[in-house]
Amino acid sequence: MSQPTIPLFDREVQPPYLAPGYKSTVLRAPTQPLVVIPHSLSERTGPVFGAANVGPLDHDLTKNSMKNGEPLGERIVVHGRVLDETGRPVPHTLIEIWQANAAGRYVHKVDQHDAPLDPNFLGTGRVLTDAEGRYKFYTIKPGAYPWSNHYNAWRPNHIHFSLFGPNITTRLVTQMYFPGDPLLDHDPVFLSLPPKGRSLLICRFDMAVTEPHFALGYQFDFVLRGSGSTPFETV
Amino acid sequence: MRQTPSQTVGPYFAYGLTPEQYLYDFKSLVGNRLVDPLAGPEAVLIYGRVFDGQGQPVSDALIELWDAANRRFGRFGTGTDPDCRFLFHTVKPGSVDGQAPHLSVIVFMRGQLIHSYTRLYFPEETDANAADPVLNAVPEHRRQTLIARRTPAGYEFDIYMQGERETVFFEI
Ligand SMILES: [Fe+2]
Image (cartoon, rainbow over all chains, first blue to last red; front, side):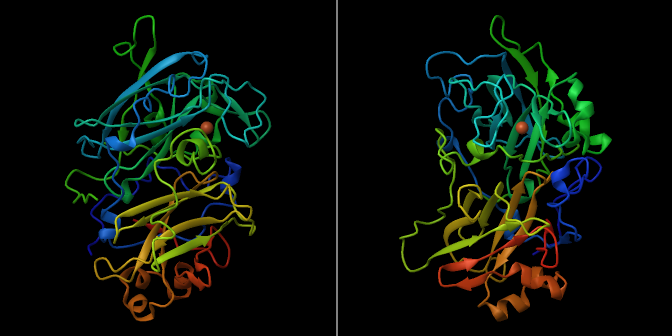
């Protein structure tokens, strides 16, 4: 047992639990202060995933659910690195991906948005970082979609991500947004972030990875809590 | 470098994070069987519900369970059980680092911009619980929220986001 050595959540960039503009936080945000606990092996360990967990087409959402043709929409390639707070790469860590299709529709029973499903696009995938913490995946640029938070509410284009990192303290679920999206100024989920955190969730258009006659490139780095000196445990 | 900020898991995580549980055509990475439920007498069922501030069970929460003693991980959404329950097949873990036996629990849902960490302890471990450094870091009147209830089916662990019985959540 030891006092926390892994940096806590950085409240200058992380969202609060309660953000009344995002209405469903009101009944779901804890109201009591969090209890800071000493770190034990329970916190310094976490699940480990490897190549066996990732299928050959998992990193290509444009192909992993093809039924009778190519999915519709703008093909994109997203790449970047997973780093810790000291800038050290986080190798061989899992990234899970899910998103709406080009029309802004999720393949989900409770998504009632009146926009077409795409028989050739499921919108989910996963990728592992390499030894230098790099990742790359192919997908279709997700469309904006309406939601019921307030009158005429629309979510900006975004891709959902889930990352593990080396232990349960580095767990991260987030959303990546696109540069220049006018809906960002109206989205209470994005605006729940303190101003210093907002630009950290917007990817960068990247001509260098844009593939001629094929896909537009975007670059996005993830920074997980902690430092490389964290005593990592593996399963 | 600045941490990447968290955002909500949203209402549509099921086909990405728990596809097989929700019958989507994509392979799940993990499910709710940390062990085979028929593995033997040690297999136990851990189950419960998540309640919002009005006492309504939450049907779109994602619960993750980490058993550090056995290095096992599970994941289950509350959207497939008619009563919004999560269910895990596992074993009661042994002690790690001299602590009372416990499971680490991570809670995600729409309406949570950042996930919540809690722990599940076992009611019969009276002495170990009394000496546990984490339980002792919790105000005494709130410790009970971390202790599961023994039932004929296994252990029941309800999570209250708000209210009189609000579960203790940790900054870890
Ligand atoms: Fe979304």
